[in-house]
Image (tube, rainbow, N blue to C red; front, top):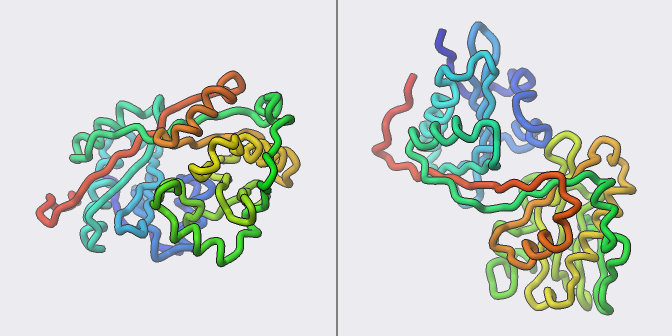
Length: 302
């Protein structure tokens, strides 16, 4: 039997939700206009899911793809991706994007799928480092790191509307962050552990955290303004987040830490290598792939 591919109806979402990451399970309800959920169905039940999200710049980012083990190797994932292309063209979207880690159990399968579907060759984008909370708290600098005079760390939830507008305005300007390091995203951040950094009253840095995978706190975005990097303020900021994680209400449910560091963020790559390496339990590369669509693309297989 060939699985049927179709958009997931809101009433059916609870049957597909376990096929994606916990942090994304609420998207069809919290952001229905941005969410693209395609389900594979056979014998009246779900056998696969592709979950995507419309991006502000006009593309669709694939957040997760899952096919039940008994249905793998039968072209279900290929047809989910092909159907996504049809959905994208119908919405006037010309770009699809996907991120994934290596090494990964499905490296070879995903590589074949993307190549056969005409995606561009994946490129490395992030270092993904993992550690247990207990292990990383053993690092001496976590206890000793102190801010220089004139700086203060504050809960990100206390960022003012005026400060938020200013940070959006300076994005991409010299010394400031690129879009990939923006502290603002459609994912709800973790308020207990996300912090900002002020210098003489102005926001100059941040560590934004998310609870995406069960058992993990993800340090998603780490940034310090270029003019302040020589003052070595990243370590005190990270240490503050680690102490907040240690004292958080969810520490028993998320006892591990995952650090996302952009390869282009050279200062933070250096910090990771010099200060974190001996305390890590895993280090992987995150890759990004994309496909640019044209109006003349082949029709969606049915």
